[in-house]
Image (cartoon, rainbow, N blue to C red):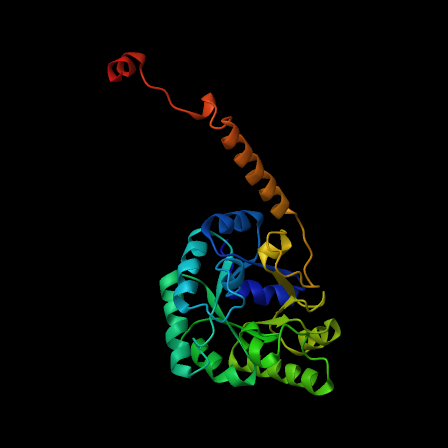
Length: 275
């Protein structure tokens, strides 16, 4: 059965943990769907792990639509949400609604996600009024990396922690049906989770969040540029892939691949006429 926003609501109500992973392509989406992941985030993290940028800022709406289409085609049951990239919603409420609409119309995704607290509440309210579900995102917000001064834990001081709690309440009131908490102290994430009625999805925010999300290249050991403390490698696919690449190179260089069983034949009579 296709998962919807109600899946998130029921999970929070029944205290069932929500599983979410990033994904950016059709074949990986198929695997995640078959595995039973609750939700896929087509994250603007693709800027780093797929497109090779140093951060998420250069990612465009067109990039998100391109990869979002591929992911949606790969799933049957998994809920798909897509990040709204940098400057696709910050400038105005109008821009936010138009770009959210484009993303949903052109990809067939189920929801959008955007970063920020009280400052983006008008955008969230307008997008949800346009019948587009929204996931909010506070704590470490990668699109604000320049103003934050780097990838740093958020909410460490009393004032900062209090602001995150207030932002969470305001985002829920604005209409967000779920809230991502990134790189905040676990005890603070627990307080936020208890103070709002919509589910929290943590990434570096402890086990008391209603669900968890990871960048799949991180959790499979495929992306070695960054090793955040909150990442657990559930499989070392990076080493497996390197081994496969190495074996392929060796066999091609040695003439061992392709072998006879990997080739096609032609009738001998035809072959003789060709000489």
